[in-house]
Structures are given as C-alpha cells and as structure tokens.
Picture 1: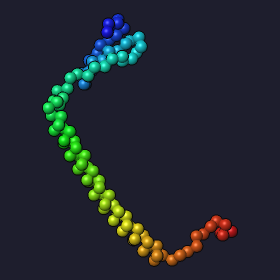
Picture 2: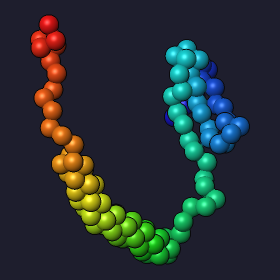
Picture 3: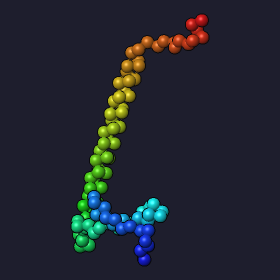
Picture 4: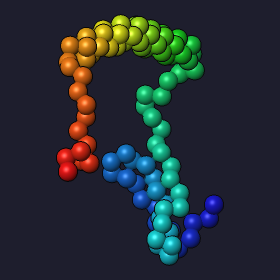
Length: 100
C-alpha cells in the first residue's frame, strides 16, 4: 500500500509495535505487532494442548469436589436454622394498622 503524505509511521516505545497514523483523520489506520520471541513451535503443540487439557480436568475435578461439599454444608446450615426457628416462640408480626 502506498504511503500518503498525511501518514506517519510510529514505533511504540512500550511494545515496539508499528503504528501508522493519518494526521488528516487523526486516527490510527494500521497496526503491526512485532514478532514474539516466545512463540511456540509447531512440534510443541501436542504437549501444550495436553497440558491445557490436564489443567482443565484438574479445575473441573476441583469444582466437582467443591459442589459435593457444598450440598452437605447447605443441609447442615438448613438444619441449624430449622432448630433455631423451632426454639423461638411464634409471635404475631406487628402491623402499623394495629398500633392505632
């Protein structure tokens, strides 16, 4: 693509990306990221996918165990609240209408 006179090519000091800015529009019209040094090789793809799969399975198993314990904890809390409610006397709630 031909470069216009109103276009400036700038390099970001932080990430070293190349930005093309059109001064007439006042906008970035192009962005090109530099090559990454830590880009994975194609031969490592199987290992990377297997690690990701193991990590997902471990997180899933952890969430399943947390849910199993959650049911027991909620049942215990419900039983405690029910016992406490049975100990308290039953009273009629006061209404504003009754206070007059």
